[in-house]
Length: 447
Image (cartoon, rainbow, N blue to C red; front, side):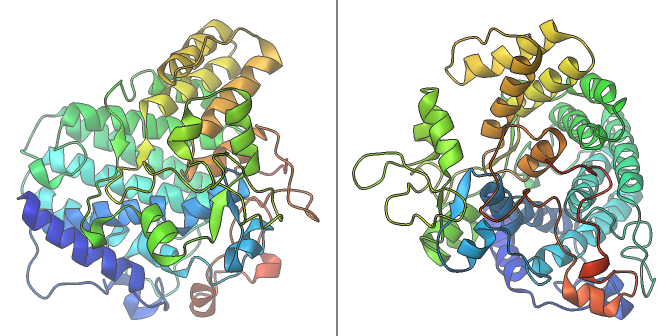
């Protein structure tokens, strides 16, 4: 089973990265999967590309942009020098926009759900719902208002749903997924699930952490969500239950950071000074886990706009291993959600306990502090844990922590991305760049 699964992943990853751009959500392509097979697919043949596509979205250009903007990495050459100072365009995330919906996106997740519902397999159904919720939740994180209620249906020009409405739908879908998984009905995906092997208990915990994550994403404008996030995280991912993407030494299955940093665009992106200096000043063991020393044996980063490609460090050999299984949703993140949410709901002892569980796991001594010092430490630890993860975008926008100095000439780090131009050209519901908001609905205030 594993060998055949690898072949499917290899073929899909290549297709998902190279698919051309077009009117992805409008007209006849709305319900057409460009990677569609002519023969009938089994549930596993729907599921494996959904997994691969989710990893592509979590490790690709969106994650690279978040890492650069939040100074974990730095753009030092060519297009990434522009990205380093927040120069972005309408064509930058064309492939990603498409991938949220088709080619292993929401369309395929819906087809998988229909098929396993007909089979009476609620375990598989719950997992499929989790992937749909994760995908559309990420899209809302990035663009704010996105097509969802009319997406991947026979609607020529799907409307944009408000970001907070999409989050509400995500929370409801995850709750439904937990109910399906808790029913204990059906065999599920088994070995086709390359992360949890179909283990219902682990998927339930993952869904609770994902719910907590999305409640946090709403808390800046709806602070009651902190209590909801805390309740979900307290039954979330446990030690040993991290969600890590599957990768191997097979070229088309390799970790995408390896593909970019080593195979495709070597030297375009190196270490960010803010993260390097933070880890050095704290004698944090993650310094050598994340980065490699430069040619003189030092750990050096590049400031925004500095373009220091002469001495800045690259990623570590561990992180640049093609088979490195990228951590995407983790126990440490779950503990730091508990810490932030507990702090915001007035329980500093609970916040401190969760924070120090992470510090201990990372090889650090316990933190002692309260008030502003405590929340600053929680969010600094979250920023470190968010390394190479899209989640840093939301955490920084919500809290403005850690304190980062924007690139020269900028007053703030960007709060959202532009809609892709091809979708704007084909769907009149997409506003022109000058009419798009500077920030998303869940984050009205710049840092």
